[in-house]
Length: 471
Image 1: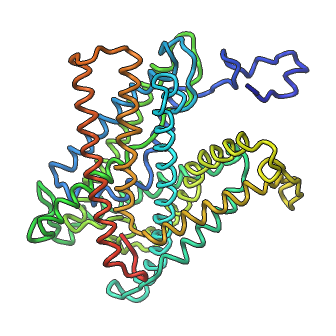
Image 2 (image 1 turned 180 degrees about the horizontal axis):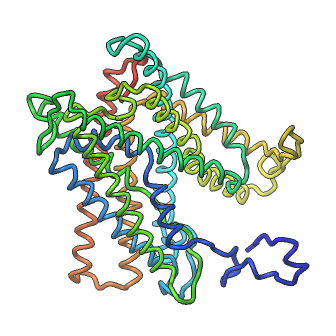
Image 3 (image 1 turned 90 degrees about the vertical axis):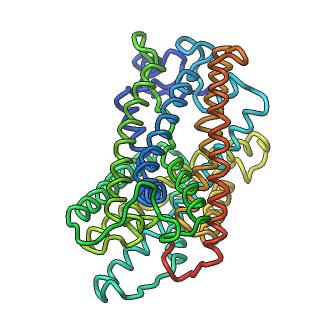
């Protein structure tokens, strides 16, 4: 396995000084950096829909759902941390990817199923980010329109031009061949995610403190016969669960090896800190947002115009969302790019269209190596995701579908199956039984939440007006 070494290491005789105990580049992460990575990865666009989700579930169901799914995420993540090495969780061989862990413990078709679930999830998230970024840009334009013409002005704007703009920027960013060179973009994206999340929370607190409007809140959320019909109540409740599952998605960071503290223990500590911090923040955003808007909470509390003033702060928050998603799109797209390009290179090693690169000197950059296959494939991918986003530009329903579709296989099923195989757990033992019950319960919840999101998409398509902002 090739490991890039710095030429100076050869000159100094320190060939292995930057390598870990398994010959790979030395890991530098700690439980502190891993905790920060988890918090940064989880706190994102999912926070925007939590006020709406809590409004569907109420003061009882909303916090309960947030806590329950946070516990499930924490529990299964600790199981996955033990799978970082195989067969022994402390001294075994490292698994560098999720699929490596599935391959080591489960093998067979489950490896392909895991890969399919992962890459479908990545694709769905990039489509969702295209939708969300365009909605935020439309919200900036509408915010300025409302400020100028009054809150009752129509201010209708199409999402499509902003999706095209977002797609064009992503086509350029996607041509960066080395994912490591995008670290600066990831840092900016992280800062932006915290900025708009705290702005939204602060505006909600200010709205509650102002007490200017009569806001209706209940223990069970939206009221049948007043806010929604009986069937709408059921569908919206399930969609809200899908939105909450979307909010809880992350992977463990890379922890440096230590002879004193095993990596799995550091990962578990980081998971506990990351998930607990995120849950507190989510509960705050969801409950304060619900207190601010009540049963009329918008699907996206920064673009659904629960806030009109100060318009410049709302503009800034939505610009932060767009910038964050510019970087986040690449974070989720690059692994898919790398997988397809690596598979094609192995499948057709002699094809010059796939493997050859041409050196081109660019001003202010230097030498850039163009690979025609990379150019065509990545550009096509961005265009396709943008077209799908144009067909289904519905924020809440799409987030719910992604969350429901990825939560069960990636957060619940594979970690539990790996744990059962790793510990050689006896079939029909007490622990085996309750783990299986948890797996099946989460599968049922995911399926009905996915069905609710599909129903919401169909309903939204029937009522869709392309020149109005979609919540």
